[in-house]
Length: 357
Image (cartoon, rainbow, N blue to C red; front, side, top):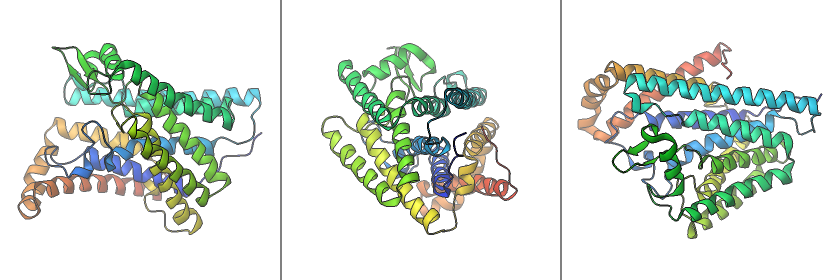
């Protein structure tokens, strides 16, 4: 049998930071009162918030690299590992669909989205694991290049990278209709940020995480720094030809965000694996899907019964708004929400409770 998987505290910590950041930007007290760094770019561009989801997908790739042996598995072992990977991928997709069903119950039928964050994570996990099982390093790099350049070619062939009229949005509107994230029934135009075509470069992000995971396992901090700086150089120059865009997950955006994720991984590795710092955030990382799914369900239930809005308008907004402003009050609500789930995940970790998907 191949040797067992490697485990790095830094990977759990970075995953935990990513999930905490997701919750922070997803649950403000007032969507009309948000500081600019906590908002996504309207279309082209990249804010700190736009780094969060690709960082999580990048860590998924790192985990694949560390969780699968670098030794070549036998055909039987490969089939077993492939089956396990896709069972996990399908469970993630199923949880994502369930969460959107809960959102439909809490809001309305338009809140149900066949595509979504967990659905994308599940698909990218399954596909990236398949690539790792059947391709060596050279083949993995060719897949990354093919996905990024091929998607770039699709965008160019589509004739536009502007809202509504690009090829990715047109495919989303055709497939999903009113269940797309945005849809205009009058024109038939729509857009889904986790749609079909943009999953291709998201898979490249995951595979870049795989390659960074190999560097982490075999070489360490300095090589990770070189990897990250090279990605930033390429991703920083690419917008001269194709802008950063999270909604379309443009290739320039995929490489740029992978560069920042690699530098964060290098920082976490140096602090928590090498220097042995207390792993602040690891509890969120080891139960990441639990925190994400649980917070989603909690938010939907509380919103359905008006508790969310009542707590914000009745407690935080009057206490903080007059002193520090509406944006500060909105951010305080998000921080309180994250703190609740942070403490809950810490308590679970203290009791050795880990819920695997």
